[in-house]
Length: 163
Image (cartoon, rainbow, N blue to C red):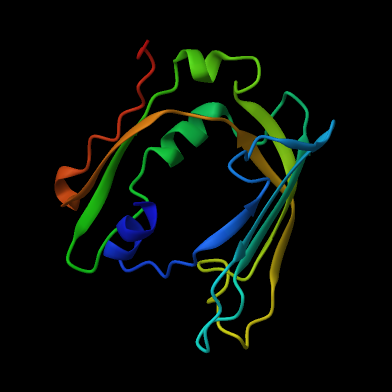
């Protein structure tokens, strides 16, 4: 469903295998979180697509406050050429986001990929890598309505009290 939904917005989709499989919060080491995605289909137009994330806990004082991430993650992720958007509402004050294992945590690490928008994904591209990336590790439940008119998708409100 996610692949078909992404394709509706004109996104180049790469069916992939993940490590760890279906557990982006699994620690590869007590002090690190590693996530890898590798395309399972390679064609003549695109190189074997991949994404590597390597993060570790950082200081409690984040480069950006949690409110920044809440506002950023409340924006449309997809927009089609004909002006349709996804309307996603994330819920931040739930038992999931309050759980000791999934409460927001500041992390710092690296991102390496050949995927757009970081890179165009063609066979001639070089990899891109970003070090010392400041981020927040968090799991949030969400509701998503797809293919709504973008001008109607302005109510990206942060839901603080959805218990």
